[in-house]
Structures are given as structure tokens and as C-alpha cells.
Amino acid sequence: MIDCKLTHDGAAAVDTGNHWRDAKEFPPPNGPKMLLIDKSLGVAVLGSWRATDGWTHWAPLPTFKKS
Image 1 (cartoon, rainbow, N blue to C red):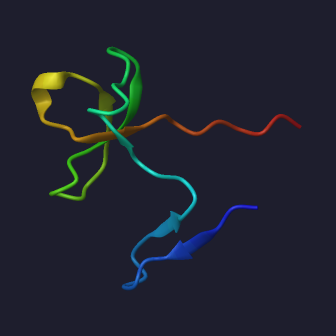
Image 2: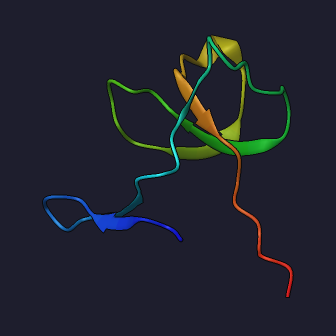
């Protein structure tokens, strides 16, 4: 079961069981598309990892459940 909740301002739906991966602790692969974020800025983007861009965390893209 997915625990999905709204943020306090109702602007976003979040999965409280799915967390950003710390790029220092879990280095992302170079090249493929993924979600990237700088924790201090709080806005995620879709892009490719480059260590020089300053992203602090990342997350893989979701997939569809096989039916």
C-alpha cells in the first residue's frame, strides 16, 4: 500500500514511503534520466546527473506495474 498524503498547503501529493537518495551516500549513475534535487532549494527537475551541477539528492523514475 502506498502512503500518499498532501503537503500542508495542498500543493503536492507525496509518497511518504519513498525518499530521495543522498547523492554522497548513494552515488547516481552518470547519463540516464532521473529526478534531481538540491535539498536547500526544494524544487525537483528531470535530468541527467553531473557532479558539477550541485544536486544533493536523486530518485529513479517510476515504472508501470506489470498487469
